[in-house]
Amino acid sequence: MAVSTSLQSQSNRWPAFIVTIAVAILTILDTAKVNVTIAPIEETLGASSAQAQLIVAGYVLAFGIMLVPAGRLGDIWNRKAMFITGLIVFAGASLYCMLAPDSTQLVIARIIQGSAAGILMPQVIGLIQNLFQGHERGQAFGIFGASIGIGTAFGPTIGGVFINTLGSELGWRWTFGMNVPLALIVLPFAIWLLPGQQKHKQGSHLDLPGVVLLASTVLFVMLPFVLTSGTASDDPARWWFLLVAAVTAAAFVWWENRYVAAGKSPVIDFALFKLSSYRNGVFITTFYFAVMPPMFFVMTLYNQQGLGHSAVVVGMITIPFALMSALVAAITGRFTYQHAAGMVFWGLVIFLGAMLALAGIALWVAPEHNPIWMAVALGVGGIGPGMVMSANQMRTLSRVPVESAGVGGSFMQVGQRLGNAMGIAIATSIFFAVIAMLPMPGGKPDYSDPLTLVTYQDAFFAASAYIIGVLILALIFAFLDLRSDRADKAEAKTGQ
Image 1 (cartoon, rainbow, N blue to C red):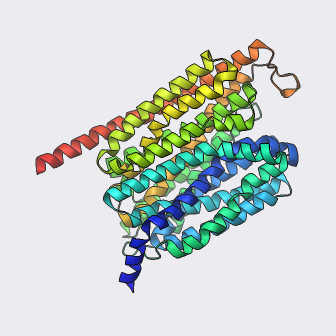
Image 2: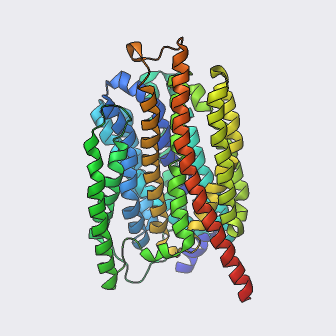
Image 3: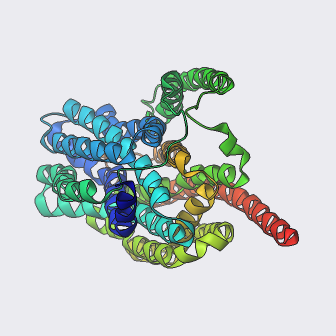
């Protein structure tokens, strides 16, 4: 029976992979498409600025907190069961978001939805590790990287289309509601196709105190950043959470070392960080996600608020990027098994060129032509992220044992969520700090005043300077990883 099940899972591995990727796209879409729904939600539900912020931040925060515990539970229990549970909760929470009668209920629904996304994503990574080996795993991670790019880039476009087509209230409600029929379509295929058996470490069990300490650390690190709007209303006391995070992090490391000394299996295997490929990959992921979502968000603010372009036009700027990055990730996936480190480095170089081009377009291109030229720059620049996402995922997890795939991959995802939260907080704070100097009669910019355009250009350029600086940090780690990879290959060749 075990042989039959194994043969079935092997024959179904690509259809099963499609199921996991469809769900990965759903979870990532909901981190991005909400950006264009905030104004309509404030208008129709009367949400306060704090509630509007929590509608965005609550999802990201819950997502980040759940990743490692859910990844660990998937590793030691059953990834398929965790995947199905997460998908059902995600569909129910999306329906709750759609039908929320007031802004408080919507915040609660978004936190539940983010928790479900945090349950799902580690299982996606673990199942890919479980289903594929060697070159096929590289191809699979190539498509996975493309799916992340598609979800991030197409999110604002989808939200903008719903709002422009259905109006403010129905538009934002169906932006969330679209998840329900899609999840119900995927669910029976998940039950049918996903493998129910997996390899486990001997004597593995859930380290509950470690899970609580790690989740608390992630919460207290992310909290001050997700509560940062860049406006004068931000409470400076929120930064004390970082001190609390330092205490819980120290307690976590102490507990995990004690747990390992007792011969038990910890939440995070610190031995993974002795692998240069894993260590560098986590840093690259964190810095990369401190760049890409903030870049999209600041670009949306600049074009929508600063230049007065519609939500659907602004959303369409990212379409060439999504298509190019998806195409490149799918094509280059076959090469990641041998050339992942080089692809990450050169992909980041190309992306850096695109970021410099965006800053130049904001300064020197006429406002009415900004969307088209930014779309062109991102279309060309999409080659870089298409290489980076697939190759870095493959490179980082290349030496991670299959039985640790869920937690190993989910810690990368924690880096993504931390980078996302910190990047958006810092980039938008810089952007709004410059905008605060601009007089806005009636709370809106005066587009007839030449000072308005100059101020928004300065704000975008200042935020871009921060984004470019973080991207250079990612490039430094990619260079170190490339050197390490070349040294390993030279040593292996000499050994032969």
